[in-house]
Amino acid sequence: MTTASAQPTVVHKKRPRFWTRFSRHRLAVLGAVILAVLAISCYGAAFIAPYDQDEQDLLLGPTPPSWDHLLGTDELGRDYLTEILYAGQLSLSLALGVALMATAIGVFIGAVAGYRGGWVDDLFMRITDLFLVVPAIALLALALQGLGRNPLSIVLVLSLIGWTYIARVVRGQVLSLREREFIDAARVIGAKDHQVLIRHILPNLGGLIAVNVALAVAGAIIIESTLSFLGFGVQPPQTSWGNMLSQASGLIGTSKVYLLYFPGLFILITVLAVNFVGDGLRDALDPRSTSQPTPRRGRS
Amino acid sequence: MRYALRRLLYSLPVLLVGSFLLFWAVRTVFDPLLKLRQVRDPSVIARETERLGLDQGILTQYWRWLSGFLTGDWGVSSRTSGDVRPMIQSALTVTLELLVWGLIFATLAAVLIGVWSAVRQYSLSDHTLTGLSYLGLALPAFWFGLMLIQVLAVWPQQMFGWSEPLFFFVGLSSPDQEPSFVDTARHMVLPVLTLTVGLVAVWSRFTRSSMLDALSSDYVRTARAKGVPRHRVVIHHALRNAWGPLITVIAIDAALLIGGLLVTEQVFSIPGMGRLFLDSLLAGDVFVLLPWMLITGIAVIVLNLFADIAYGVLDPRVRVT
Picture 1 (spheres, rainbow over the protein chains, first blue to last red):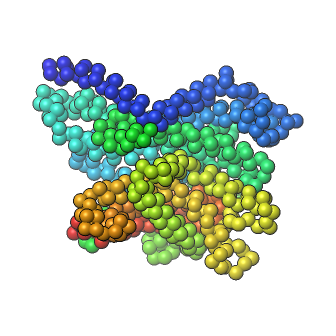
Picture 2 (cartoon, rainbow over the protein chains, first blue to last red; picture 1 turned 180 degrees about the vertical axis):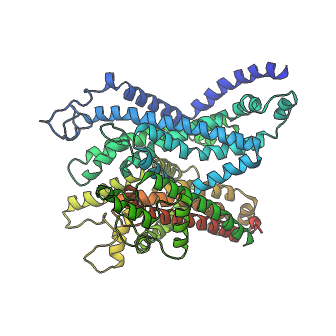
Picture 3 (cartoon, each protein chain N blue to C red; picture 1 turned 60 degrees about the horizontal axis):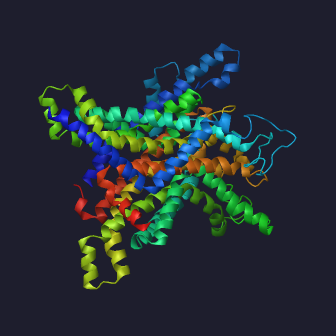
């Protein structure tokens, strides 16, 4: 009875507080706006991009940025901004897919390990130990070499290797949540393990999960581009920011080096924006971390 | 010390299981006799299968490799047909040089930046450094490396019309010159920056926050009240206590550092462990990949161990027996 009547008021109180706290974090708001603009222009590239995808102007060839082609053109005379926007579709989708999947796996394993304890927990800790010893990038390259370099296996491999961090964090949280009175209360009235986990523990992990998804998106964009550079990423004719960069990486010292600047800048801006949003989420959702942003506000 | 030994024993099974999984994975993915498949004569395949013991179970094969490895016989690379041990040794020598300079530079830079921002909290320089660390975290390292080449090596050379760039970006030494400190330094600057950009960003943030903790603690206030000069308080009292957690973080990031080698050595064509891994992986060269994983694994574990011990030395309160 008490929980049923208490819950709605908690939810109502939380909503406005979250938004006021998030909006007070100016960089986070800026990041969110940038992300929105980026997402709309990439996924809406068919309507927004200045030229058609793969529209070539072979007579023009590669040209530096100009008013006709804001970011210049590549060797085939394709408008580079258009190319980047279309490539962004795959980069952003991959990153989001990895972030969601890795977080889902990590939350599940971490929650079960923390809640159950015993051998499940031991096994889980040993597996994460294994991942700590081997450089992740080497493991990723190895797995992609085996599974093939298509977007699906990239999402799979990155998530299967990227879940350990969130799993550790969630496990720690669950370990302390498990001892709280409301969990005892739920057990006393006869809730099953999975009910306790889903109805009572999971909602308390909301903030943690949101922050982790943001951080994982940032990480996935960087790792995808790095794997592309090493030759294990998305293969042409599919384009991502990562493989645009890796294709342009040989142009150092030539007059076409501008082709190397822009995909990198897009990655940089996206990751910065995602990180700002992640910071904002953390500050808004975790009451304990308020000490950090307070002085920032005082400055402005 | 007993704690350290226990940790070491604890991580051995992890390494063993890891190396077996790797062995199994590489053997499943790659065909060690791929080169010979073009030969029409089936007896060649049969003979090689027999000679390499490929007809035996995977566990037996793994055991054969492991016992060879422990007695110093590391097998023959299928890519270069050379002995694996000298290959790894020469790659390791090259990489260690890069790694040591990288660690020294990254630690120094992180501590300097962290202490500076903590002492001048919320000043203009603190905010600038915070902004830079955000940038450092958001950069793909290989792109940063390529940009460094363009900005620090190619541009000045083109601008001033030099016959050679100020900083070299291929290899770690000039092939036609006597090795000298200046030559090495000119090769080292860009790779070290590339390798450490992300780490400096993280570690300096970490130093800053643990310095802030230390600076606001009672013993620092006491020292200040006694009239100890400010710089002495910062270095002797606060930094000494901020070191411990930092060293732990440095050790935890060791695997990250080794992963960074793959990228850095690829960008700057350095014939070290990172390049060796990539080349061997593309060729499915299991006898190089296995010792590679084991050696990096051991390196990470030893670094972790070292951090535990160093933490105990720096902060006697946490010494575990």
